[in-house]
Every structure is written in structure tokens, then in C-alpha cells.
Length: 301
Image (cartoon, rainbow, N blue to C red):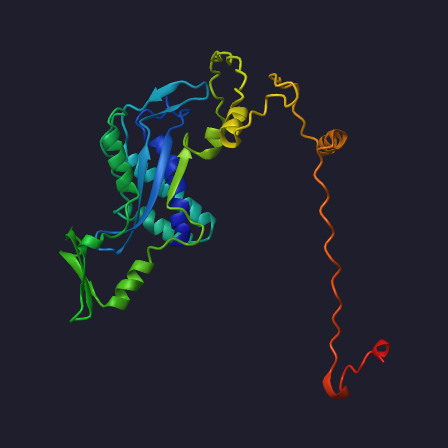
């Protein structure tokens, strides 16, 4: 069953374009298909099925858009069944005898429902439909745990095949049923095909947009000498006033090289005196008492 679920979305998307009524005229058109894999029914029973959100048309190789006038539900179901059974037979998941029985049965065993069209302007309805496609398999609002009876009760709408609108079971059985709907590691439940596939979208040539003129940046203004004003405000000494003549000085350049700064300060006699070297550390010898262990150093004798 896991192999069938992995193959079902691809076979559905492959036959989606052929499910249109005007097959010869639209054979070259490629629609965009979003497939959501679901495994749970209304009462969380095992019920594998697919939800599709498909564009109502497709683009041809020359980029022209072709509208699908109508969708043929029975033909879409037949194409899906044919391609899925062929793929399962190729993978040796089923036998030719079983395929012959399924095809010859009066009931097709599959069904396809074509919903109503949604206009691209109706964003809210599109969002609601997409949210329905990827909804969780169960709702906590419908779940009730009967602590006294050690049972789980799940309510939903009436199931015509089961003839009831609830499911009651033991907690362990409920956990086992929920675990059936957890996808395998690396398996995605929402898939994109056709015009929505990553490879197709990556091959599209983006339309060449006209270059937007970028206004030239205005010339930068020279920063104000606020640093000198702040120094004068804090230390009450103007760093731009000469100490000898008392005239205003102008900034010629900024020096950032430490060697050049030290050389200039040494020439002007403004270098800070080197810090005195710290006194040498005294060596401390540990001598064991009563002549044991280390003994007495020879230079002490």
C-alpha cells in the first residue's frame, strides 16, 4: 500500500491534463498541479485518496495559455486507474491476474470528483481550498476521552458505509489507528507537478525588466568637528587652540599608524615615560620539616 501511495500522485498528475474534454487541442498544454496525499477518512479509518488543486488550463511550449473548457471526470478516473495499475504491475507489486479482475469488475474501484471552478480573483476561496487539502487527519474538537470507561470516542459526520457518526475504541487501539497515518521519513504529503514542478519553474526565463534609473547619490558633507567641541566642554580646554601663540589651528591629517605617532611624540618630547619594571619575583623553596622529603639545600649550610 505504501508503494501505491508513492506512485498515485505522479500518475494522477500525469493524467490530469488528459482529463480535459478537448484532449487533441490541449495535448501540448502543461497545467500546474498540486497533489495532497490523504490516508484518513471521517472517522480516522484507513481511506487513501488524493486531493488535487489544478489550474484550469495550461501553457504550451511557446508560452501561450490555453483554457480547458471542461473536465471529464470518468475519463480522468480511467486514466488514473490505468496508469497506476500499470506502474504497480511494472514494480511487481500486483499480478496480471489481479489487474484483469480489477479491470473486468463492474465497479471500477476508483472514483474521481471534479469540483467547481474558482476564479483567480477569489483569493479567500483559494486559500480555504488549499487549507482543506492539507488539513490534519483528525480534529481535537471531535475527540473525547472517557476516563472512567478507558475508551476514546471520536465523533464526525455520518459515514454511509459504516452507518454511524462515531467511533469508539480502546486507547491503545486508537493510538495504533493514528500511527497508520504518520508518513514515512522523507515522504512528503504535498507534491507539485506540471507547471508547478521545481524543475519547470527553474527553466523559465524571467522576463527582462527595464532597468530602473537609480538617482545619483548626493555628495557627502564633511563631518563637523564635534569631537573638539566635546573635549572643550568636558576638559575645559580647546584642543584646536595653539598653546604657544593662542591662534586657531587647522587639521592637516589624521595619523593612525602607531610607529609614526610614537616617532612624532618622541621628537616633541611628549612621549609617556616607560613604566618601571616590576621587581623580580623571589624564589620560594619548600623544605620538609624534620629533615624528611626535600631536605635542606646545600647553599644554606
